[in-house]
Image (tube, rainbow, N blue to C red):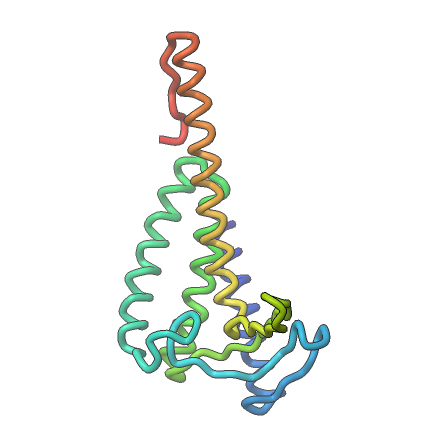
Length: 177
């Protein structure tokens, strides 16, 4: 099931990138929700937030290592009976492979989701344009957030179990190990 989730993220990512490449010219902007959310045709040869531009070989090698690690850890967490971590890893896997394919084939990644946040700071109107991203990036970020959530939930459960053990004088077992 988790590999199907990864495949779904990958297919959605590749389909949306294909739409952007075939329906928009580079630099085109189409408002979805005023100036807050626009679809724009953009290319990125770097990583998140535009860092490490032009480091194609570095990204290809790192992504291969990352994907191998995800495959390994996904198998391990499924066997442990975990639910949230394998889901997170599946989202990350689909996203990593989606951007890997773009970098391997074209030397760049198609980005198109752009959000602009407008606010007043110390009396000045400020527009903050969040770095343009794609579905693959979303899979990696949401997957990472799920892993952080699982970490916090596991920590809270272990703290509660430790407190209970201290009160009752009994050891508890950690079922997730």
